Length: 386
Image (cartoon, rainbow, N blue to C red):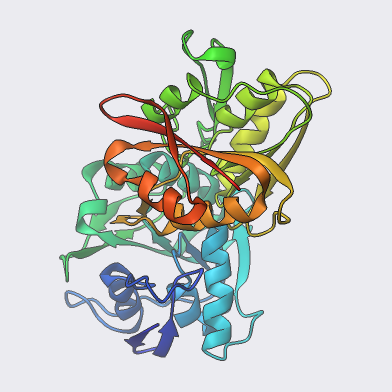
């Protein structure tokens, strides 16, 4: 747990799920910079008059929403974990649990936004989609402030604000963080978001060859098939019968859909902590699955809601980043959850970059791990629940 000290108060904050081994904080200098700007002058300019309907977009672990709970803000995020972190941090700091209204990136934004505070996301495509969805609610008097680390804010970032909302400038950098100030222009045309994006898969990847995939903005490799998944699709297990399969960290659902096509009697559960990812997976599955194929679509924390010993096969391409930080915490959580959910004899199949050393974690958790396939960059691993 760490303590964030701001003019709004002192807050005890953690990431979610809370892990005593995780030394990463629940906020960074960009969050601090934004909170200071709301309470004091900058470059000789007075603090903005934040108020009315306050919308906080992309709050990563609830630090902004918790500090600004007195404004009773609307939080919009694509992350289930961010929502859970916000609830936990509000409770930890004695705030009203109803002080923050939580919406997902798939929900309709408020009809009117008077103060828009936006944490710049890693994905430029997701920022574009968000700004298009928010633009109709923004008016000439809306206070719009974005925040991010210097390495997250590029010319293309500013161009999106300029094109969709209005004239945009940046602040000086403080602790490698920067603010984005945007003055809404009601005269700009309101255009629909160009997302989702659909494309046809290549012909050399097994049962998904030549099929169409749907990608909503913000998911990993939203405009093409990432090379790790491509390698995985060529080496998926060959099974038949009514298996219970989980596509864990499903992204656009191409792996789980491949499993459904290869074994139409199976039931596939698609799980991701991203609302955009699960929406993509459902559209990909509906467009390609055989008639009568059974599937479930879950936005959640890895395998937390899957009953123990209820699954035959788990397929996963686990992430190794948490925003800008490199960490194996997410993969470790996935592997432990998979083992608990698998029946005796059930299997976890994982693809990952060779250098990540997932085999070490899998041997520690499962007591076994075999290499199914590999190339100079990727490896497909198999672990069995004994």
